[in-house]
Length: 154
Image (cartoon, rainbow, N blue to C red):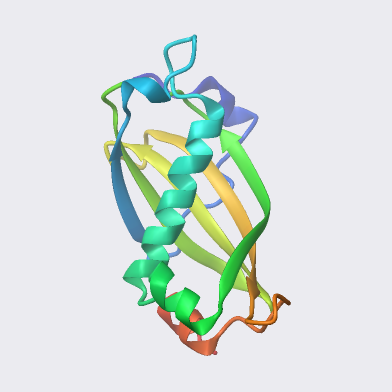
């Protein structure tokens, strides 16, 4: 596939760090995820990113059930997305997720979607800001064990 002409206007928002864990989730584009132009609808890409974030938390030792038991929630408050290339039915995609940084009650995750796992065939780059919520429904400090799971010292 030729290089994306938009690359000159929208360079990579971020790339995974070399010194922190990067979690990967594999997906295959299904027919019902296509829009009338026969490519993945932009909103569907957000579903891919969300699925990958939950899988990343699970892989880090924080499955949804465990978080619910502790009374924790993670609320997305901001997503910045650069759509670089289209995806079509049958494309094999890799969603990569990593920690870009932490604040007291929030974290910023980097995510990107690659076709076939090829870093030179990047379809999307995103930065996702999420706030940790405690049992009382209010923002809480991001737990140290979460920071550690993402390769960041507490």
